[in-house]
Length: 162
Image 1 (cartoon, one colour):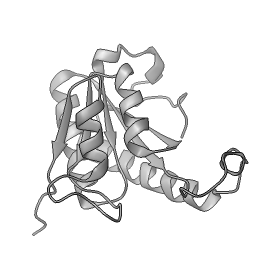
Image 2 (cartoon, one colour; image 1 turned 180 degrees about the horizontal axis):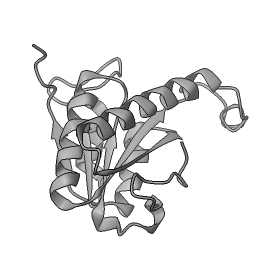
Image 3 (cartoon, helix red, strand yellow; image 1 turned 180 degrees about the vertical axis):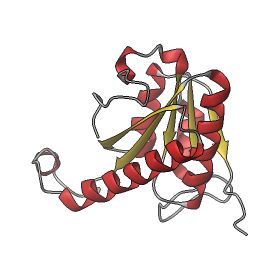
């Protein structure tokens, strides 16, 4: 899915007032699922748009020219695309009348979400995600986003599954 994706209501997200857009970071975790549910409900209240973003992260010890080579990380990109597709489908299942689109981006998840914060009214993230070493209370991405985002941030704890 790309930045030119058409929203559920026929608009493109670039044509939407940034104050109507809520970005939710997803990674396939339970925390991200809870964040998605919160973002969809909040967008419904605001009559806004949900922008589902999954950021795939290249390994740290890879040369920049390798990262820029298309296809090198096709498995990671395909996994991220699947996560976004599932999240967008879930959002539309929860609230079919709420605009929703998805995008896969590459880079450091925290930095990418913070940069995205310049174009949206709210960033929503789960308290913890799929990353290996996480903080005691907050995950490293959620902590970074909360500390650095230029817009409000909501950090959503995972909901208990019955």
